[in-house]
Length: 393
Image 1 (tube, helix red, strand yellow):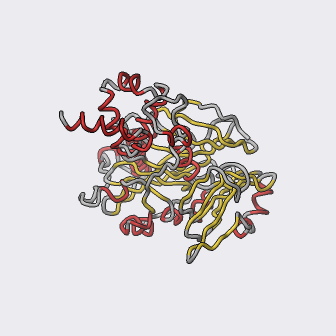
Image 2 (image 1 turned 60 degrees about the horizontal axis):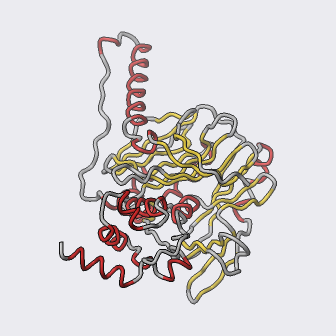
Image 3 (image 1 turned 135 degrees about the vertical axis):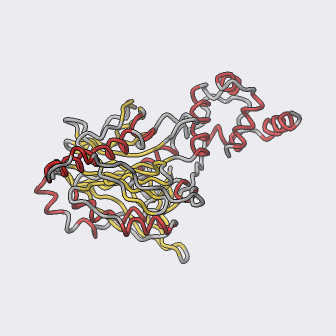
């Protein structure tokens, strides 16, 4: 297992480049290409097809303990070392994983851990759920000191249960149509997904063949509310640009101008439209060391005024190359909730100190806690008093 220390870093796309975007309605899909494919890491999907999955985060799967529950349509199986990959890709899809239960008319799959070693050079992970579980676990234990404002339940169980909502890809018909029309390049290993020219998600793999197989699983993945939020906006326009006719006097010149135009598009997409994900520092936590690779999950700053993402990635240890990347854009409400928990934890869950750090009053902070959906943390009389004071203003 890898170290659990948090590391601050930037997400770089070294070894990767983007191709001109493709537009459908207000979706912009940007192909990500990899010119040098090492071939020593492969990822494939393992289908589940159950109505609900429950993941045991510690201890035996059926034993009492902390659980993560969500709709999980598929897992990813990571294999490394070229000979092992070629031998296992054909059989790993049907390998048993977890225990299937029937609860009335519903099928429930009980799985053991977000990341599980299955063989000497094979690892199963639950894509994006690994990152979401880490996000839900932020300051999950709640107050460590029995401050008098907090309820008995919050002092004993913390934030349990902690819930966030997401949107499956198939919920948006335009997104499904965009993926159907998507032209897949020969060296393509991923895609940047924009809605109304705002980055929704990034998905990058190690090998072009794996991307071709997993391209349609983007419909099964979950996204933030941005997937549905901008439906009222008009379609986005293809990126502009023009060739300089004065530079073209032969086919060689024409090819050079086309290449320059493509590079201009790529630079714009990577540097300008990459937004907060590619230009900001993230807090990354190593989750698993697998041979020459490290699996990490990360979260951006959680500043309410910034663009924020959670995600997971597999890095090649020798040079930091990203071999796998999957991200989820947090909504403004999700960011506010996480930021509030971060500020409370930084103040040791002392409401007076947290209010002072946030440059607000204690009653106003209590109202913010209520509005964020964390009112169960507080004693009813404390909450009622703050709400009365707020209503008089």
